[in-house]
Length: 86
Image (cartoon, rainbow, N blue to C red; front, side, top):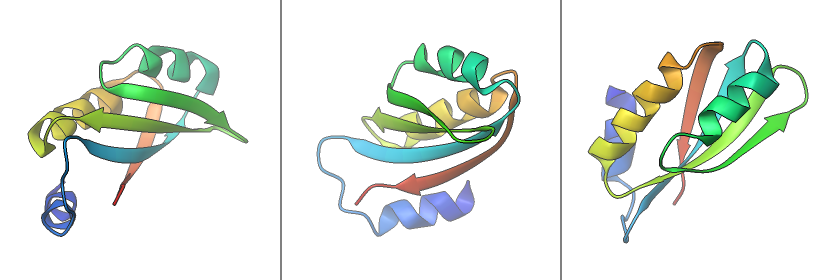
């Protein structure tokens, strides 16, 4: 999370902060359905294999961090990789 905080400092933040979140998971269909219900998740798609990609939009970095904690805590999620949108 510290590395992510450093990346945010170099991004010009407009009204909302957007991040693409790549999720490795067990039972991807079930995980994606659960992740779609989280506030701030504007899109959740299955990828080939056992992965999914989310688009998360939040009002600030602190809200994004909290949402990422929720994503990581979702049953079936193994690994999360985050890329901030410029």
